[in-house]
Length: 423
Image 1: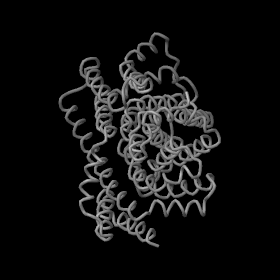
Image 2 (image 1 turned 90 degrees about the vertical axis):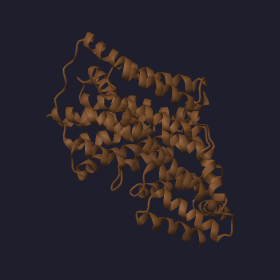
Image 3 (image 1 turned 180 degrees about the vertical axis):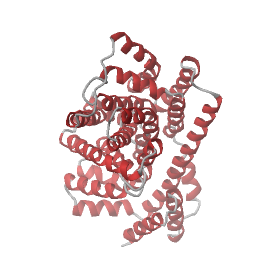
Image 4 (image 1 turned 90 degrees about the horizontal axis):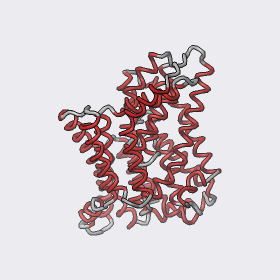
């Protein structure tokens, strides 16, 4: 009964549109005081939440993605991809997906990925005759690759909560990321074949293709660097993020010469605002987590799940429905900080690998990014495309279905997630 009251109170605060950080932190403080626990646990929890070396990578990855966004790197990636696949059926859409995947491998941010590629791709695709709703849905969904293809900020947060290896999570995200890109690309080809009015691009000469590819090489070099140093164990994700940020500044100022002081200060300020928002939620969630742990809420929820959803399949179906509903009201990081501490104790009892569950959870919160009414990517694409939010949402539903198909695939074939980690 107490568990229902606490969760109901939290949902009530969120329904009143109280910011997630204040709802979590405030309720945590009330629970500690009501239970007679020391209020000194609040500052100790706040302090502990900001002392993680892993979380230092969050502002670095945000800085790197914002620098590349302001430096126009997205256009170079898009033109390079278009040069190679633009003449295929749905080639422009495939180029968009490839560009999103490539920028995702640099940024770690879904919103940055959607904004960077959307700024370039939306006008071009609409001009070429692609239906606007398809374009908006494709870009909104393509942006979500920013938190699945590593590096990924939600994976960093998941590793912080569960004390799992962030490097292992990054490796595990590669297979599902490629699979999802493939499903998006396959749908784009089918869509283009069904809509004969969508023209194909011209096949460019090989020399022109290589010229555009060379211009995109600096950005690709950052992605390759991060990939190699993390997966070979040469550097931690935090160290790789710091060096990647330095490289992004060098590339945009010295090589591409697209960075100005005004753009740089804008990138810094936007990264600072996002970092503060993320870390404030993390700190508040730490206080709330301490409180519910003292009230034994995770253990009670775990016992309830085992009693009623003792099978791993039923458990995952139950969690999927809950996350789809929550995704209509909460953004990705908030969902992870609310749900993972409660669900994590159940995983071992059900025989679910925590690394696999981290990828499954990330894909599910990807759906939250493109489901109304609060899907962040919907608002990003609406702003860039100057579209109606209902048109963006209408174009996104088929991609939500493709994300759920990815969930089914990784459930049936766990090696898609865990195969590389075992190597």
